[in-house]
Amino acid sequence: IENAEIREIRKKLREGTRLEDLEADEWEIMNAFLYLQYRNGDLAYLQYQADIFDEERLRSGFGLLVPLLSLPTIQDHWNRSKGGFVADYQIYIDDLIAQISER
Image (cartoon, rainbow, N blue to C red):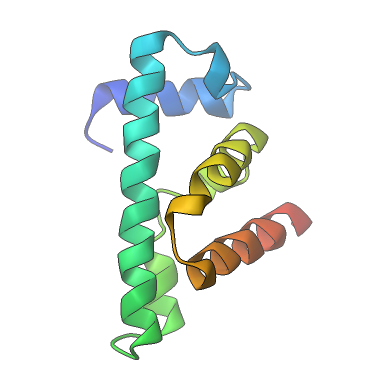
């Protein structure tokens, strides 16, 4: 990630800081970043469902999101945000989280 602010915030999250404990401006930046990652994944999932590309290509589209989905604070954020996405995509991400959690 080229954006230094996002890199720093992601580092804080990986070190155990919860989203709720970030400074207000950091929370806004991360909230926007996550929403864009969710939306990007949603569009990729749509293309996957339309057989435009396979699951391997779909998973590569989640490159920035998957490491974050292992964090409980990001899982909580997804659970609060997922209502804005179609049910099939919600199920896919929920299953992805479950797979990550099993590791």
